[in-house]
Length: 428
Image (cartoon, rainbow, N blue to C red; front, side, top):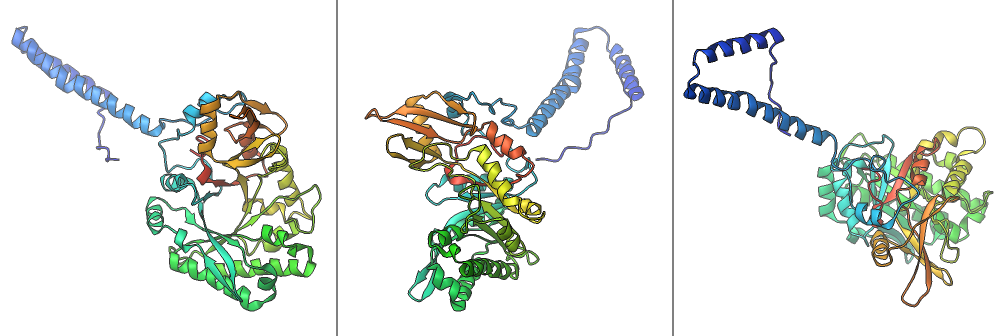
């Protein structure tokens, strides 16, 4: 924005004196037509035009301060009686302000390679986020060794543009696909895995990684064995400390960060394979943030809401209400997962996940009536397809539950999936 000129404002007495002197000088011209013409020109150029210019400047400056698209609350979009027309109209509208953050706590956003729009959103709203995690890498077994696959997904041009547009940290997601028993039991493989991650971070200029392994370990039954469970936790500690020992390429005083993905408990009491308060405390020094997956409450054979508010609160309370206050004090490190995708359930068969584009297509085609499910505080609707099969669709809207979750004292940080963007105006 151009610098404003330094304008000195005269005192009221000086202004009155100026007006009197001007009037006296004007009287000397008499009442002739030419005199009146001169007076008109004087008034036009020295009073009207400057006044209009100041008015236009103020209006333009005010418009820059008050963004064209205001907050979703001001636009009356946070409500339970939403309709499909509003979503079709509002889904792509965001504030022109691409830099100012409304919230001070960290926000982690995932970007998926199968939905390119997330890349554009990440660039445009870079400064709205603190952490960006492109879903790029897998750590796999290769014979008796390991390999880190995914550099072909990394877009150097996008990374370069991202760096120029803001200061969000880039921590690509790495999913552990390697055979877990061999990895955890053999020091050589553990060291190899960590070396692969560190080398990739250094060569690509990343700020760390988001690491996902707990769900894989649970699927393999690793976490049921107390000894293997200890080894699993020790590996995460080793990885975190190794990352912290490396200075970031972008900032020699900033260490690489580790965000660890954890899932919700599967019942009201912790099972051996659940990540609990003791685990949270055990890893707190080695891990900079925990990406908690507070979604996927319902599945293909269990139609229903994706992230019921009561369940989200219960999950957090269960995780943070460990013995003593150690776990609760770590709430600042938890990224609360907010799903930017939904589910389309065939009531007689099961369901599948849908992205924002697919969701908008269903709204345009079927023009459904939304229903508000009070217990879960989510919207859903029914429709029948070409074969007259009935579907139920649950997809997150800008509803009361989102803001209720945001306002809870035990919730702070967010993680979001930009690749499936269709919620309108959340962070902007």
